[in-house]
Length: 336
Image 1 (cartoon, rainbow, N blue to C red):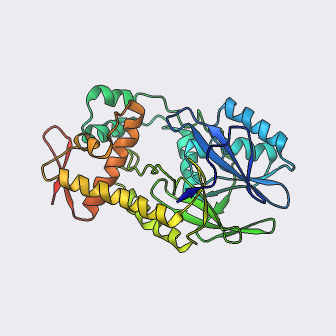
Image 2 (image 1 turned 90 degrees about the vertical axis):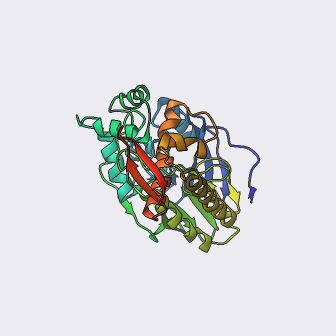
Image 3 (image 1 turned 135 degrees about the horizontal axis):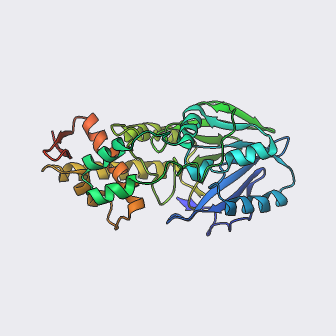
């Protein structure tokens, strides 16, 4: 596996990957401090692929990008619903009054998250973290936030969209892009493949160096998202091994088949480690050090608990683990 560039492009700058495909980045206020975005040319201008967070700083950088382009924005396509991808999709699509492309599950889930809890109590969230074994103070910290977290960094979505489906072909200008749906990191993540250019825009589904978060969150605590992810990774090995992969984070690279194998092996290693540890009963909290060697802050704890939950759910669904509830109402896991 090797990289096409030796460093990230600076925010507000454009790099040509090949004729008709441009790479840019937007900053993120997290440990992972950037997102890669792409522009695809068509007959009318440029299709935006993912948008960055819905903040004033990101809007200012997009204005800088718009000034550099030789044609207007002609469409907005979002790979999945996470705020760093969909954050400014509505702002851009409605500003230029252009088509908006997203898969159905991602679009309506993003609409639901934007609406917030609508007064629903957070007892289910509290129960989810309690069953994971978190202490009451941390549970209060994780569940006492407002209902507008998602919408605070996501502009209102367009009220109509073009639905992306698996194997769907989109023609932008003279080029054809195929939609390949991956699941697990998000419900119906859309990747784009161009056979003539041998380019895959992989979003978060296939990343170099880091692994996408595969979580079972409080919204669907029994979800078998890891099975979804492992089931939709092998299809990418049907693409040429020298495919240029344009990920949402880190650097563009060549080595798709190798990376798919690494991602599968990473999760299989974690599953084996969890099984070994669960020879005696364990809680999610006690299993976190098996998967995460670094110290977890409150924000990363949300993702870590969900990631661990997805792995034990996978093992339960494959009859490798049994789940019981102890006298404190906390789930315990042990090999079956």
